[in-house]
Structure formats: C-alpha cells, structure tokens
Length: 178
Length: 359
Image (cartoon, rainbow over all chains, first blue to last red; front, side):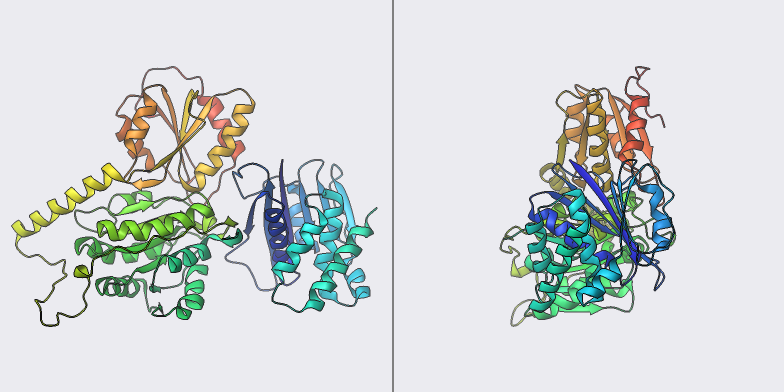
C-alpha cells in the first residue's frame, strides 16, 4: 500500500497543519510516512502546499507526481493541482469558497462547505479538521480514533477546549459525506 | 525513546545537541534555515551552549575553528553557495587537525543557482573542496532517521580522527519530515591534551596550519595522508539492496538512492533483476564493496542529481571491469522512480563490449 496526498490552499488555512496531523496519524498507526512542505520563494498570502506519503513499505520519494488524493482549499490551488491527481483518485474541495467546477471527470470529487460547517460549529478555524473528517471517511487511511489521538498530541500544548472543538469538527466532517 | 515526526534540518540540531555539540555558528541560507533556527532556540537552553548567527559564512567557520581548538564539539551548517565560502576554514580545520561537523544541505548550482534539492557538490565535498592536500570524511544520509544517526557518528568520527566531517544531504532531506528515534549518544572520548585550555605552568601549545619549512610541511602532509589511509581502510560504509541476484546494479546515494529504490521495486515487479549499491560514506568511497559486486555483475548504472560526479569514483573503483552507464538530473530537478525505471529498461540488456562509460 502506498498512498500519496497533496494538501493545498492559502497560507493560513491550516494546509500544513492538515498534512502534519495526517503524517503523525500515519506514524501512530504504524505506517512509514513522509511529509514534505513546499518551501522557499513563496509569496505572502499566496498558495501553500504539502505532500504526505503513507505506506507499509519503505517510501522511495516524498514527492507526488500523481497523488491518489488532493485536498484543495481555494480556487488557485484547485487549478494548480487538479491535473496532477491520479486517474480514479479523490479530489476534496472546499466548496465554501471554490465556486468553479473541477475539469477532471475521471476522479471522484467531494465538495465540503468547510467555512459554513465550521461556522455552525462555532469556530471558523476548525475548517481544516472538518475536511480531515471527510477525508478519513472516504479514504479510511487511518482509524479515526488513532487520528484523533494524533490531533491531541499535535495540539498538546493548546487548551483542552481547542482539542475538544477539533474532535467535534472531525466527527461532523466524517458524518457529512455519506 | 519514542518515535517522533521531525524535519531533517531540525533533527540534525537535536542529534547534535544530544551528541554534546555546544557551539554552533552559522549564517542563514535556504534550504537549511530550520537548523540554525533550532539551534538558536535549543542550544541556549543547554548549560555551556553557545549559538552565534555570524555576520558571514567565513566568520562562522572561523568561529568553529576557535571553538574546536578550545575543546568544544562544534558545528556549522549551510547550503551550497555558503559552503563554498566556508572552504578556506575547512582547509584550516584539516591542516590543524581540528574536529568539527559541517552540514551541507545541497541546492541547485553552480553560482547562486536555486533552492531546489541537488547533488552538485559531491566533487567539492569528497575531493577536498578547499586548497591543499587533504580530505574530509563525508557522510551521505538517505533518510531522516539516518540523518539522526550519522549526525551523532559525525561528531565521534571527527574526534577520533581529529578531522572535519561533512554531512552531505540536500534540500529535500532537510525539509522532509519522517519518523525518527534518537539513539543513545556515545560518551565523548577526546583527550584534553588536544584542547587549548591555557598552558598553566606547563609548555605552551600551538595549533596552526602555517608551516613555512617545506620539509616540515611535507612531513605533516604525509602524516595526514597516513591518517586518511587508515580512515579509508576502517570507515567505509555502504548499503546493498536487492543485489543477490541482480543483473544490473544502480549506484546512488542520498535522495537519489531513495528514488532508485522506488525504481527497483517497479522493475522487479516486471521481472527485471535490479539492485542498488548505496555509498553511505562518500569519502572514503566504498570502492572495495563495489568491486566485490563487479565480480558477479557486469552492468552498472550511476544515478545522481548532478551531471555526473560520483560517476568518477565509480569509474575509478571498477577500472574498466564493468559496463558503466549514467543517468543524471542536475540543477535542482528531482526525477521520479518511473523516469529512472524507463532508463534502466533501455540499458538492462546491453551486452556490447565493456565501454568505460556511456551516457
């Protein structure tokens, strides 16, 4: 098993955090993982992205030229990355702010209105965790309880309420997709 | 110790501190900035720990010379253009037989180049780099775990042979996170007699690279040479991967060896018997291990993220005893396992005479 996932969006949307928690969860579930952020000459307010590879074998390359999963949180990153997705792969989009339709018809598309859901939950900042819930429901990459524990350890220094809020956001996202 | 998910650059910092590094000086450059950042944050919390963001690369390496002479475990880090600037000091460290660890997270070059991962500094690192008759030990990690292990080993090797040791990785290994477990560092074994601690009532010590009498200098260089020969005999390290039944051997180190392993998996699924020879010490180059393989295998393919640098060491090691091909992607391009497996497919069945090299 070898699954590559690209997370992309605005800087500040929690793109790198999503990748980091997924990689952590993968490690805690006993897999080999790599996490590679985009680095270098990025523009402030521009796009951010990272690549997570999860495998039960040694991982050759942390770079994904044809990832199985793409999570796009804004329109520019959807346009930049949708053509990379492997045929038959999954594309998760933040439909609260992405109004255009993906041009790919050979992949499964999941639209999740992250901002709307997160706002109802009471904290806009949980939008990325809502997405992780939806992502885990479809991919089944990591058992939800292990992933939730990883969120806890990643956010370890933050308040209990924050961890609890993220747990609820994950569950709502998980239940959002049938 | 638990497994943690950490970035390569920061792991070097943590492993160095655990290994007893108490002095770090450096000047910022992408893609290794997280290492000085980590040292700035964490070295100051350690008793006796000193972190300096120096005014230049030249200043940093010379501060390392001073700290090492005074007996500290000392380190500096940079990326390709910055390492070029440090070469004067590295030559001095070698001349003065001072231990130090230098990290090079290579990026695309020559010149300022770019900030993408590359392996274009192999020749600079393994053939001296600075002026004069010397070598430094060069370690080429291929995973974040190996970065942790080799960083600790680097300090031990530097002390044991009183020589600078370079960790030669690239932007990808520096930026990437992988799970890591830190091993227990060995206690330091470095005699006080080599440290500048003040003469007290005794004889003064002199550490210098300026030896004006050519005969004295010659003697010093032969002494260094004997040391290098001993290192070459004792410290070669390499990994063999799927070589037992191999018809073709890929030779690659660091990031490109990971890509090679990915290609080998694909090729083996198609029934091609391909293996990997991965040098871990780049200097000393594990030539003997390679020659051993050449007794059974005729086809070798050197694969680097450069225009062909380690290739020269492979040619020297095999001296016309094998068919040697090359595939390289210089300039900061990171090739895919799929690309490399296509290259191997073309070369796998070649039986034309033993040419020195074909590109």
